[in-house]
Length: 148
Image (tube, rainbow, N blue to C red):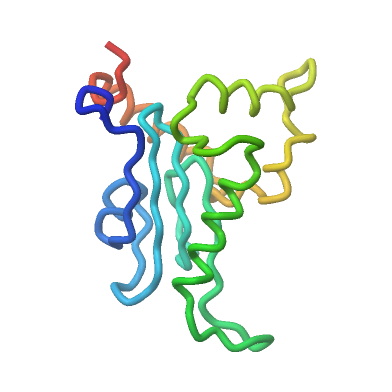
């Protein structure tokens, strides 16, 4: 991405989201996947399956509590909510500034329990094997991540 001058890939294509995250949704279900040039990623999906993404926001597409008539708007609102947590505009363009902001919430032991992102939850999947698979993928494709 960096070699081509791209800061961010943003897609609503369920196949592209599946390719990057391993999380498959129905073709008619809303999905948003964003990945920055530094590898940070966000997936907004209704899928309950495991996904490889830095942050997974669960999208409700069925509810007995409320009528869901425009799930794409709900998906866009979740994306907007995640971006709005940064105290500056276009966080995907400011890698150092974004990382400094995220690191400012870490305590002496490196935990970030005080982060405003903590309330979003860690909905990755709870399977530590996902991190091993992600590390292996990055190691195999080091050049694509600018690590060579």
